[in-house]
Length: 111
Length: 114
Image 1 (cartoon, each protein chain N blue to C red):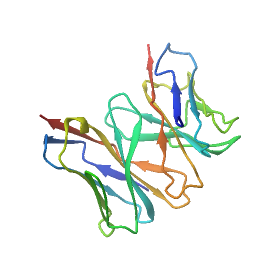
Image 2 (image 1 turned 135 degrees about the vertical axis):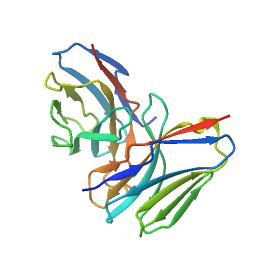
Image 3 (image 1 turned 90 degrees about the vertical axis):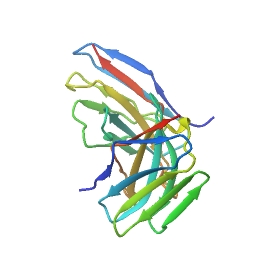
Image 4 (image 1 turned 30 degrees about the vertical axis):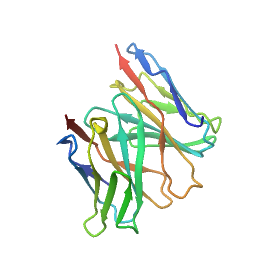
């Protein structure tokens, strides 16, 4: 079945880059998303990438997609303490009504 | 402002009681979803609805019920049959006419069973 896996924790120093990794199993995935969740809040869409793209950059965020290995990563440049949150990777098929979420990676940013 | 609202933010339930969580959206989105989030776990889909007066079970529907009488509203009832209801509940919606099918989330309701 469909599955999305992420490591549970990542700790970085303020000003460093953070790289959060995700693997997925469904090769027919069309849309891949990164969401951010701050404590006690809902999920906020950070960025998304279509499966026919290899990379997408949006200000401090860079998404890399390796379709062959079914690997997605989110790089946050110049990580700030405000970036401390849980980051969810998610995937969805064309015409599908379900989005499959990973368990989330908790990012700790040390000052 | 367009968005998704959930109420209440915190809810306490005694064992054996049914409680209803509210979810309203003014984004004119077609589809709405309910997820449950437990610590250290991803989001698990409870129910979803693509159109008014129709809804489908997700992966963990047992002990829950929903209705979709209006496009804007998708309330979730946690029944006494749900044995472990303490969790964070998230509602989401998406426009099926959009190009990215992105889900937009409400702020969540934290349910605690006393």
